[in-house]
Image 1 (cartoon, rainbow, N blue to C red):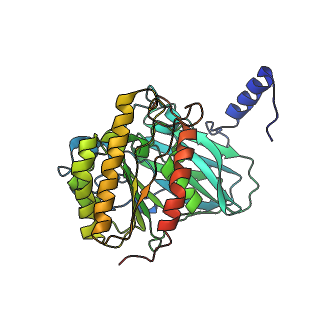
Image 2: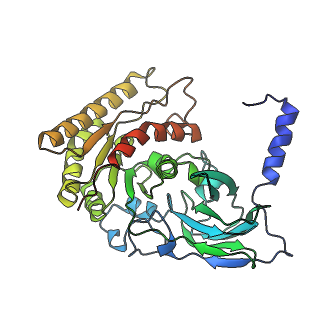
Image 3: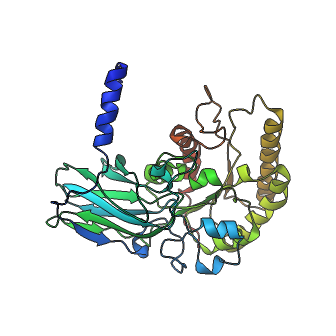
Length: 370
């Protein structure tokens, strides 16, 4: 139960919260730094990348449109899991761009990292590192831990690239990176700026990250801001992966006629590569202004209609592992689940995760495809 407090109490709590967040390590503190290699990062689909933490393979350069290629250098969805007995944890990461924030999205999400700890079988948020410099930031994430061995994860930036990342613990602490389990099937999510992470407050609050924690499954985030346009060359790349499920969420970047013309082909290409892998088709979100602006409502309705036609056509061909995820209604209640009428806040991302979760959970029950 939440306790009501006056304005002064809230301001004091806010100040305490800020002071407990990431801070520059004291010069008197000694750290043992553990550099993270690309193959130790969860949420990557390919190893043969141009840069260590890219989200697409090197061969995609020249194959996909330049904006998609450029966005693939951002580390959205990538995270590092580790176990340590440290009483304090620090992080040092080097960014590829000096653009730390955007006009509608904070530096904590665009260029920062956040820390989670596993507790009682689930994941609990602990701290966020707010970048203040480029290219390299070195910050203490948390102190005062019990020193009992525990599992942690750090999510990488959403709208910036990372040249290198290292985790710091006291020299006496045990430390082990929990490299991705190659035997564990991942979920691949393809989509738009919403999938990419706009406009979460920090990296761990995208709907893909939330789903990964709730279902305890690695998620590959292939959201490309403004460029999730269901192009065949992207479908060919996705088909190289062998996930437990595909989640396709490109409708916010498509006009209705694009959904009609492109989605059947996109599905066909995936099916040629992965005949038995579950595919979840996500309806367009319902925007806060949909009930007020007829043009918006018509576009959403028509896009969803064509998506259902693509779904029915696939089912008619005998595809029993394709399903539709009904639209998440971001206009629910007061409509306060977005930053700008389109991109979700953390609340909006939580709503999206809750809408997709039962369908993805069912898909993950399917026997593994060959």
